[in-house]
Length: 371
Ligand SMILES: [Zn+2]
Image 1 (tube, rainbow, N blue to C red):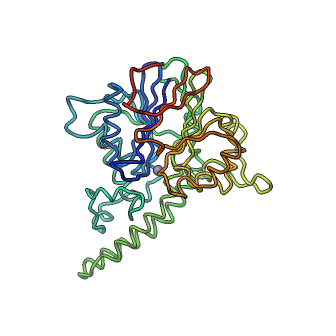
Image 2: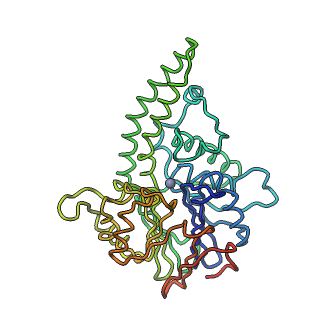
Image 3: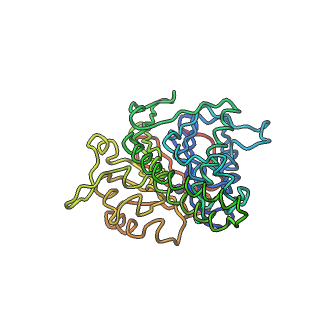
């Protein structure tokens, strides 16, 4: 088994947010996320070099551009008919929990947005979440055009590990829980109401011939308040191969992983969930190692989950992603961690599922498929 952590955090010498994992197991392939739009070509080149013809499963952990756009621009792009990568199925969080902020025609009219502007997909630019939702709509359209089935996953309905027909292998959805998704929905309903007021005002201003610039900025700002809620829709997946396990967490924030407790360890996790997350071989630090994906002192990782290794998909030289104290805590606890920005192509984890994992640099995009 190989887990390729494709580096989508350094695109054409520009730092970017994003996740992209290719799992190669028993000759089959699974893709989790695809980085930003501009990462698409790098991801596609990587898949082509390895010789990926079919993806058993494509997972979109959540709708944010730095996870979904690269999938669109690498494997769902137009004009690719002769050189298509087949996709057997797609998993995503249920978009019905984003319903209050799904843009209506009026919402789009009220905005002057250049969707083709490559900078617009970046996390740092205003309107990031709005851009992401627009991406998601076109993503679903492309899937239905190609007849690719999508299933919406959450912890409660997919509690049994699935094998996808791959020997010695299983994938289990550990999050988000229905509870988390309902919290997201409540939060978005609040914001959705405010947004509709602004849209109505925008329309009035437009009819009165006023400039919409200020209104646009306000509206985009409002959408950016939705980043946290959308992060918490992230699918949390545990992948097991023989005795080796990987925990993929998307951009899930603290609230979707644990609840507050107080006392020495201020967080708690449901026992059954903790048992499943405890001692995994590799833990993907949530949300690019951001402090809102862990906690101020890194205890969620170092005391609740206690992984054997940690992987962080983050721009280098950015003290918030990864949060510097997380790295400090991992060093203190002697938990090895690996950053995608260590080299240009990424990291390849190789394992026979029984012995130690090997962490190597991705160079030529991999060699022959292996077990
Ligand atoms: Zn992200």
